[in-house]
Amino acid sequence: QGGCTHLLQSLHPPTEGFNSSLDLSELMGDLSYDSSTAFLNLSEIMGDLSYNDSSTTFPDYDAAPCHNQYCPLFQRVAPTFLAITCAAAALSTGSLLVALAKRPHAWGWPQSQALVAQLAMATGLFAALLPSVAVGIGQGWQLGMGLCRLTHLLWHWSLFAQGLLVGSGSCSTVWCRWDPRSRRLAVAVWAGALLLAIPAALTSGTVAAPETSCIHRSVDILSPVYLLHLALCLCLFLLLPAVLLVAMLAVPQLRAGWEPGVGVSWLFFGLWVPYGVGLAVDFLLHTRLLQPTCGTFEHFDHVLGLSEGLGVLHCCLGPAALLAAQLCRRGAGTSGSC
Image (cartoon, rainbow, N blue to C red; front, side, top):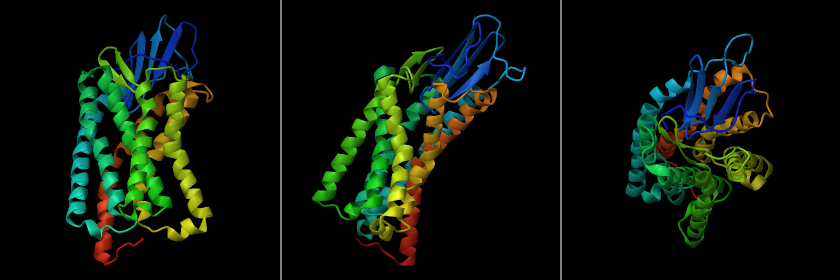
């Protein structure tokens, strides 16, 4: 976290006397160059790419060296961005919980009390992790390997729980009331989300170069545990919303039950889909199923970092959107029913 560390797989084809490696560190990253060594670290909100030139050879694209200034930009911007996002998330989630507590029966379908309360819990869990992530970027990770993996576990537990909650709320009315059936589903959703998040914890770890960083991937990109984690993330960010959308269009019962309010909770998918695409492209570049270029080297880190930063905003925009939708419904004098 916070340093440009050297780790793992290469993005560009190696040239003679030139060693390269790429690492997806926890949530973002950066790149810096000097005359003999070049380093790229995507720490905290992305990955990490580093180049070590053991001789005097540099990759030559269009007869000019490739430059990427992502690392210094990330280290300047990320802590402030995460701090502001955390404060906004605390305000929006707190306001949502207050509104739920003051008028619990005013929350009708599709923003039912049972569903909205659990979404607020999940976004609150996600936002609670942001301060430690921000400090780790700015000052290095000082909490050890165990808490690094716990952070990744809780981070992805929140994401998988939100995805499953939004998905189940989009295709059924089970969350209309808090009864034994919905309680059993809640237990299944949260327990299932925790199991799905375990590979994220197993792939994470710490590395010290030059500062200790808590990185997202400390294993080989083709290792079974990382492939499982990647597959689960792609299912959450890409496959699940695509399947739900097709089902809505293809099944008349689901299409008839669709209400505009359901789309508010889909903001979660809308904010994370770009990052899901970025993860897929990043894997293809690592495995060289896509041919990397100088332009890829210079710009892809920024694109992936921005896409994950967009996803992080769900923890403040999601509760605010749910609260705004409820206020609009109240102002229009409408209430949902199951």
